[in-house]
Image (cartoon, rainbow over all chains, first blue to last red; front, side, top):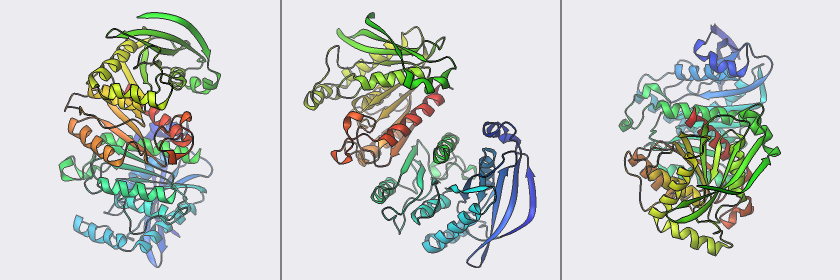
Amino acid sequence: MIRTLTFALTVALGLMALAAAAGPAAAAVVTETVVYEHDGVTLEGYLAHDDAVTGRRPGILVVHQWMGLTDNERMRAEMLAAQGYVAFAGDIYGQGIRPASRQEAQAEAGKYYGDRDLFRGRLQAGLAQLKAQPLVDPSRTAAIGYCFGGGGVLELARSGAPVTGVVSFHGSLDTPRPAAAGEVQARVLVCHGAVDPYVPAEDVQGFVAEMEAAGVDYQLVMYAGAVHAFTQKEAGDDPAAGAAYQARADRRSWQHLQAFLAGLFE
Amino acid sequence: MIRTLTFALTVALGLMALAAAAGPAAAAVVTETVVYEHDGVTLEGYLAHDDAVTGRRPGILVVHQWMGLTDNERMRAEMLAAQGYVAFAGDIYGQGIRPASRQEAQAEAGKYYGDRDLFRGRLQAGLAQLKAQPLVDPSRTAAIGYCFGGGGVLELARSGAPVTGVVSFHGSLDTPRPAAAGEVQARVLVCHGAVDPYVPAEDVQGFVAEMEAAGVDYQLVMYAGAVHAFTQKEAGDDPAAGAAYQARADRRSWQHLQAFLAGLFE
């Protein structure tokens, strides 16, 4: 691992209220670009922690949507850091590979949907990078992901990776490689838009059947009126488009995430 | 309303930890049998509040499963009281009508499933009784229910009753009288056993479609491995029977209830 480039001190004023819950002196979220590698490919992630919190703490991997690592994942990493976690926004695509259009995103994401070994390898590399951080307690980790990354963290769980829990936000639920009985170590939370046209009811049923057959400890929450990408402001506000931001579902799913993480690490 | 019979002071020691969260001096849950009436029929409910909490507070109606009002609902009312609510376990069947067998329960519940006007009337009578309590803020109420009562509180919501929220635990989701657009005032939380054979996936889909068409603010949570009656210890521990207690889903759904209520009344 090479640490490089910027060492940014982000005083996340907007997060101070959240930070206060984690510790009275918490206010300063420190962030850092982390360059790492998987199978000869250079990846560039983003690490965040609160320097007012001392000692090793649970670590959370954040996996990006199909546009690659963007400000969205950096924001989530900072929000998690302000709550006392070490958060690492991983990179699946590779350093500098940031699709500029939906078409490019579809093509890039398709590489990983079409090669689950590669997808799982990249996800596991992100998890390993997180666990290697000196402030992370490697026995207490979770992975969260959005859309492409939501399907990704479920894929990470299916791979049997040593992660305490995973949380998918509007991720795809199907897979060509279903979980095998007893192999999933992670507890699973799925935050699902109840009317997501990209993840229809039959996919929910298939997922439930897969998880039950594999004996996985999962929960799935459906949010009213929510379609694909409901946590992503860039998705606009027209549910008829099939993908749209919804503030209510965004807020509630974040609360469900927090309760889930607290339960994982209690 | 006639207040009668026993005035029981229940020092709910087991709930002290919960009570502590509601107020430092909270420890004494006071309970009372309440006899009331609907359409000429005498009903007998059970009221609970914490006398260390002062002033008007949100009120929660608790609606029983198909065996009628039992220790289960009294326990839930006391748990809610210990958290600072006024809780009222209502009576749908009538004073003294407490089925002694599954067959009797099926017959009794069937009367209400088969006459939704009557069912809604009884539910509304319970809500009115709750709102009439001097310690209840009638503008802040919720109704929770189990199995038969879970279907019941959804029916109460569909009726357009003035209740802030309803929560169904392993309740039926279908109805012969779907909600009409804009008529449901309550926010809805459904706590659903993911493999409940009495409430199959098509009922979940039908419910989602109904709620979406009616513009209801709902959430639905599925719990892994949970079948019907997952909060009821009397249901035994064999999921293959179709109804069984599951401690994990019981605990999590209670946490989801608490977060939902907090959100309603914040």
